[in-house]
Image 1 (cartoon, protein in one colour):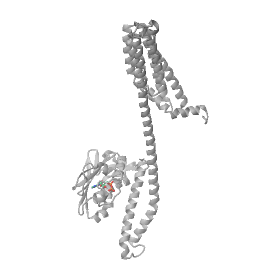
Image 2 (cartoon, rainbow, N blue to C red):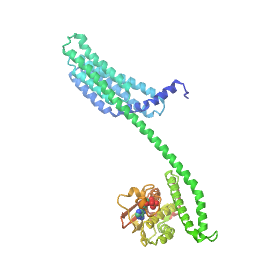
Image 3 (cartoon, rainbow, N blue to C red):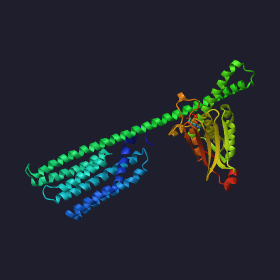
Length: 469
Ligand code: ADP
């Protein structure tokens, strides 16, 4: 257990606050990603130096570099096992990275000094260029941890200065000689490397900060979404109960059970009943949507006869169609077709397709419901000759709270939730819902499901299955 004021707790806080955990992970990740690139560079430099200079010393240095590479690779599993917030392991990994850096930079520096010493006075182009390449590689790829980068660059810097001073101390040349020119050039290159390292470090730092901002924004959005969902759920539930009793009372009044209603009150009561029904539909849709999204909608799968399902849905929307003066016809295959599904949810789907077809039809129009066998699948089509849907309206038709026409030119009511709920229910049945439509000429909405093969029907009927979404 770690207590407040405990140095371990302070270290743990510092570890998190500086984003060190992320930096170490990024550092080790990139180190492992670039392994083959580094091996190619090391091998090329070794072959070059072994050919022109002492091969034994060169190969000895190469094995030192390989040793540090192995140590680096051993860090990968340690970082993978590292649990978030475990500062102790983090400190151990950091220590190992520091030691590996000293070994690797030390061996590389020793290698270039070794090459320089085998050359004549001045003209240390090859070792200095090796060192420059190593420094640039570190600046570009080790900028996640500025301390580690500076440690490596300091060791390389020491080698740079050593190579430059070695000739000056040994031969004490005049200021006008090439040896001094080389020394000043090295000083310039050192400055350049430090400058470029800082640029890379700053850009990494900015990236880290941006990632942190995105993460925070994401957390805030998630929290806001949860509050909204919670709010919607509470409001819907709270509205549902009083609304049910209001609607029931209005129905009693309208049917005359509570006594005769004076004529002058009838229009107002009819409007009130109609609107309370609309409100109840909206709340039902909201509650359904929440249930589906929270994975709380329970589906009771059983073998269903598609013909019966469609007949029942047509029956339940019959009075609505009659009121609108729309004729509904049905085309069924001669043979029974069965699917696995939740009866009440699929009736809900069919009701939605049918009521939309009726709602968006012209007065006196026709709606046709067809059951089509398509290989192993069955397709239920609901075709109307109504207003139709413009092209590229998919997102609006299946989106949440979205409708194709804007609300100000809208003739019919609706929540814009029905098709979204329909799609989610159909997908829970491993089915598919889609439509074909021509603006001004009508639409055909269809749902498609797997058929139960004839041989499996008896068994499926015997074993109803309850599945939660
Ligand atoms: P709504 O409650 O508005 O009917 P839905 O989610 O059921 O919402 O449908 C979304 C939108 O898709 C509808 O508002 C309508 O613009 C369009 N739509 C759905 N079915 C039809 C149809 N049969 N004919 C024309 N448009 C349709």
